[in-house]
Length: 336
Image (cartoon, rainbow, N blue to C red; front, top):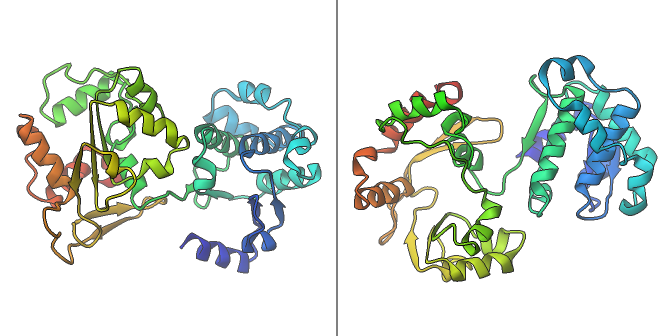
């Protein structure tokens, strides 16, 4: 889908920069193709930022009014000149500078990337670097700009919007914000002070947390981390030592074969709900066929587990529509 939009933009005269070890079809049409060595995303992005700063292409007004830490970023990339980075990425320094000029002087400009950026141990750092690249040029906050990450599975964006991140509630309200905690306690009928504001564990930190004894129970939903985690052996060692491992999926995957309990979920067409894409467009999905056997919709499994844990009063949903109404109430800026 994204490729179709890129193709149309190119046909209208848009300029394309491709950063990819592989010479793809789009690379052949790019104004610049930075065919870097694999696993060198961060040095190349640093070199782009270095070039933008070196040639004074920074959007100083945007940086001053809307950002913090510019001097720190400037210091962090000072040794990443195109010439220095070219020595171990097999790139032409002038190509790096040309790409930096195009991106910094084109408005609006959007960055889109997929798993080639995030499926590494340094994936978080690469995403932060991309954010810095956008911020130093001010290419964020206007139509046609920003970052458009292409996720590995459908509705990853929707999951993040719902608060399935360790540091935010639904709608990206920080768990460390006392006012946000008080507000959600009121919305969810929780006792005052029930939400402690402690940031949870990032997904890539879970194996270490298990091996350190901080996590006793681990539940994977709709994912196959044995195949997708950057360090599969480390993950396998961790789940072999966790006291209870539950996998909720529609297939008996490499991961679910390692589980103590497998909960059969429902696939698309067997469940009702919504999907949110990278541009925050929400689409309603209806049930086409009844889930087979013991399979249930994800929300039904969660509510049933809550009931058996004595938390049923907080999970009284009878339909996806009721859940959607709560989403609209607690995240009005996103879904109201």
